[in-house]
Length: 284
Ligand code: SIN
Image (cartoon, rainbow, N blue to C red; front, side):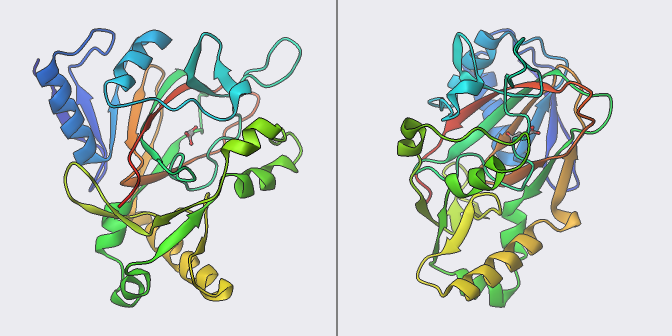
């Protein structure tokens, strides 16, 4: 099955043209799509008609799917789909995560097995705003000044979901508090600050402002300063791609090599997305 890969950003991100994901891809086309995705870091398939079961089946070909800890935001009948949405139930309660990812992060980096990739399908999008920004963490590592590179060499940093969530729990309209069962699933973890991509052998910086809160065995002030310098470096304009959504987009990002951030939109408009999240390996 021939398809085209057209670059979108200057250095990473691409559009894959000529694939209808409503149909099962033959193995050779799937392998080529997989390679194109990991090479570009972010790929979009436009104008897709993807019922939830098809999205789940496509994502599952890349690996086990993660059922998100925020069970109240899972699509009924399809627990592998997390709703990123500002739609409300008839009683006024939120259907999905309205404020998901409004800070730079890599999905599920707070788990022992962070997400390999995420697939986000645009069911309904606002006429303006609600873009998603991506930062290329392979390029961030390649261009890291020598002194910063030396300071992170061989080091590990801690990631936490609960710290980030707690910040959002308290704001008006913010996140619901965790149940005891949710809290039990969420222990902080330590990961290497750089990681090797299993497929290509490339290396990427693996820290993010959303979930990474401290460098192991380092004084708190020094750790805060160093993380701030790394975050500042990796989110420089030259390393970014901005995805402007169209309805029917399936956007796929590799959480090992990019981090992302959602941009605000007019809350009077609707933004409703289906996310599937593929489990990865423990970073090395
Ligand atoms: C996410 O972090 O998965 C959500 C991204 C978005 O809503 O653009």
